[in-house]
Image (cartoon, rainbow, N blue to C red; front, side, top):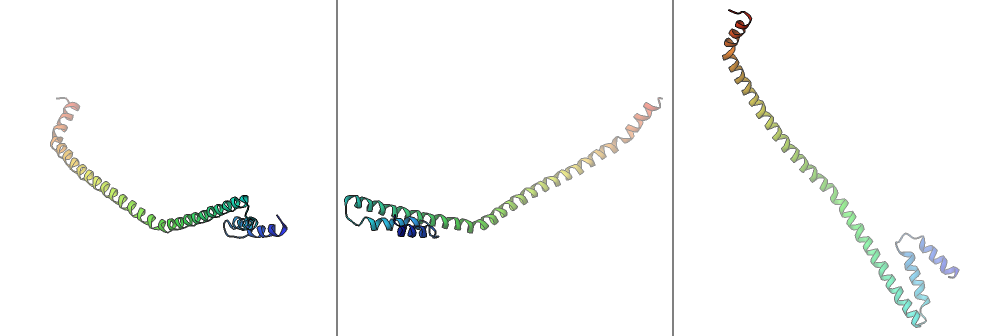
Length: 137
């Protein structure tokens, strides 16, 4: 390459546009192949195809960037919905556990009353048995 073309290529390499250096190289090759020989025509087709590939890659990169942007926009909404669902699930389970605990407490109170009732009924009999064992008649 000549110094002029190298300088042009180096300037393009430093640019921010994706694929800009390749596009510049394609332009340089297009200038070189204007002589019309079969090899030049093949090279021209190759350059055209490379240009299309680069343009497709740039378009694909834009699509990916847009998709990422959309995903980031949706993320907070999805997080809020997920938190609401988790909270609803948690509150439902907590309510069910509290209800079960209340039933157990209620049943325990009833069982205590029953045991006390049976104990009160058998208290006198138990005292008599203990007296008979401690103080034989």
